[in-house]
Amino acid sequence: MESLFNLNGKIAFVTGAARGIGWQTALMLASNGAKVIINDLADSENLQTKIKDAKEQNIDLTTLFFDVSDYVQVKNAYSSIFKEFKRLDILVNNAGIMEDSMISTASEAHIEKTFKINTFGAIYNTQYASRLMARNNSGSIINISSIIGTKGNAGESVYSASKSALIGLTLSTAKELAPLGIRVNAIAPGFIDTDLVSHFSEEIRQKTISNIKLGRIGTPEDVAKAVLFFASDLSAYITGQVLGVDGGMII
Ligand SMILES: NC(=O)c1ccc[n+]([C@@H]2O[C@H](COP(=O)([O-])OP(=O)(O)OC[C@H]3O[C@@H](n4cnc5c(N)ncnc54)[C@H](O)[C@@H]3O)[C@@H](O)[C@H]2O)c1
Image 1 (spheres, protein in one colour):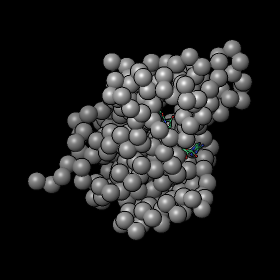
Image 2 (cartoon, rainbow, N blue to C red; image 1 turned 180 degrees about the vertical axis):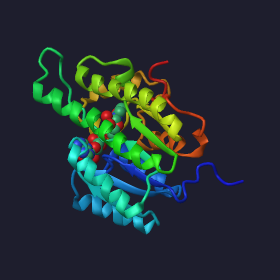
Image 3 (cartoon, rainbow, N blue to C red; image 1 turned 45 degrees about the vertical axis):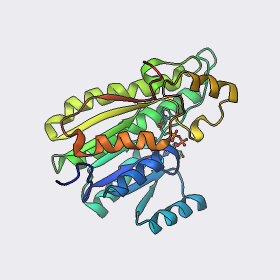
């Protein structure tokens, strides 16, 4: 029996993939057969070294640098994906930022920046990706939301709102795109060990871990495994869902 994880012949695009969850997701999809295009804001020596190391493990990644919050840059990126690959099968809307702020003092610039990257970026990419996917009547879009988007967190109202919006986007696009053979699901990671949360004090870190029933912080690979599930035929009959990957943080 052919593996249901098999992504051979599929083209995948992962935003914000220079590090953290996006990078691990790119490796996960590529090691299961997909041709993976990774996006981030800019190239770096560190990224090139990682790509070279991956290549030595037979994982070949293509890069496409642009700002997901810029509509014109997104549009141009999909033109080049079409030119080079002629199709798109998997989109992972992963690029995101988290800056803590109390609702009473959050600046206009912070509110706009958070929504432009976390929410508008996913909407722009979904629009162009779904057009390409519709040509083949198939596709899988995975939105990386957050446990803070499903349950909230004091001090992160703006981030929370930007991530809750991704759930609305997931539900509506799942309905709209199902007749075109495109599935849309969201993942709500809990507390995952990446640069995004590296500014947490040791006290907050330990307090957060103490709420995780499985007793440990999550890894980017824990999230990447859930992405692989939604990207592959293992989830062929699943759309419009939000999957918590949080070690039981909210049970
Ligand atoms: N780490 C966690 O605990 C956690 C929990 C829940 C959700 N998430 C979500 O997971 C996703 C990945 O986060 P991570 O923890 O790997 O963080 P990270 O900061 O390590 O990675 C985010 C990546 O997105 C890129 N990025 C930021 N703005 C961009 C833009 N405008 N265009 C293109 N790329 C951009 C960054 O350069 C970075 O490489 C984010 O959407 C985040 O909100 C993370």
